[in-house]
Image 1 (tube, helix red, strand yellow):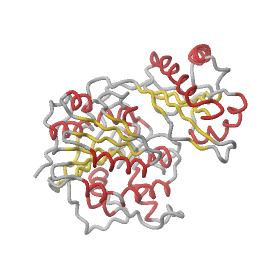
Image 2 (cartoon, helix red, strand yellow):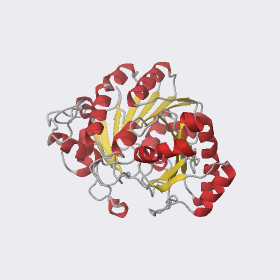
Image 3 (cartoon, one colour):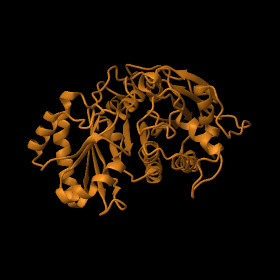
Image 4 (cartoon, rainbow, N blue to C red):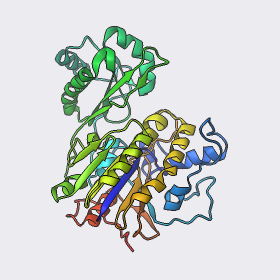
Amino acid sequence: MKRAIILVMDSLGIGASEDAVLYGDEGANTLGHIAQACFEGKANNEQRQGVLKIPNLTRLGLAHALQASCGESMAGLNDSVQPEHAYGYAVEQSKDKDTPSGHWEMAGVPVPFAWGTFPKTELCFPKSLIDDFIRLSGIKGILGNCHASGTEIIKSLGVEHIKTCKPICYTSADSVFQIAAHEDHFGLDELYRICKIAKGLVEELNVTRVIARPFVGETPDTFIRTANRKDLTTPPIEPTLLDKLSAQGGKVVSVGKIADIFSNRGITRAVKGKNNMELFDAMLEEVKLAADKTLIFVNFVDFDSHFGHRRNIAGYANAIEEFDKRIPELEALMGQDDIALITADHGCDPTFPGSDHTREHVPIVFFGKNIKAQNIGKRDSFADMGQTIAHFFGINSLAHGKPINLIN
């Protein structure tokens, strides 16, 4: 029985790409800088202290993938630990550093053009877009209309939103139109309805995602985003690994926001979770249930949304350590012929200024009982990961990427 699990540690980049200077990200290194801050005692909190403690990820090859990518050892690394499986890094060929592009490319579909984004001006959205949005949705108006951190804009405008019922609209450096609204005072179904209208309107601007960002609470101190986030995403521009596996008799289980990222294409079953640990629980349950020729594809979103964008170094470090502790649970459920992949979709260096993603290499760590220990080095595209899994399942080759020889 052959099964594969992809674990995306959302935003865990391992060193700036050669073209990072084009994105203002020269010198970024999400994992490297987190480990350095831990080593220097600058990432301590109530949950964690001292150097970054990731013995399982190090055993699998993550720390060595970092060294292969940037040429420097991870701060605090026990050099006596040698990787037991296959490790390396991949360079992104897609023209952006956003979530859909990163995920699509690892599933075999690089994006050869830049998505539409909004300028960093006081009013960032075109007047015609907002006028049409208000008219077609029947809302009273909008709040925001700017680049912003999602948590901060809810704190600053949440009370006014409750009073006026005007949704909070904002964006980031990514190709995205985000709409925040209160689940009770505005209504979750109403938020989803207006997001669908907004998605139709931003199509002509080549904006890839509209994200519903529901929240609850009554004051700035109690406002909190809920797990009912919904991403309305442009469908992939070519058939992905998910499409091909499903079409050739396999199954694809989405855990977390994967189904949204791929616009539900090629998905057999979708499971949600509120946070990284719930997502890990859900993944383990799906592994127990999975039949032959099943791909379980998981996005662990907290690394990015809770810690990377918020530039919370200690929180990010603690999240990595929590994730690391649970790796043996997955290994215990994997059969003789199963494989698993740990990777990322972009970077989000919490030591960098601003709150945007960073253009970085991503780790490739393949593990399983039959996978030989090896340094696979630099891969020229994230698509090599998808092609490797296609080859593993024995399905038709993807249009992009070169397979990695993993099996003993």
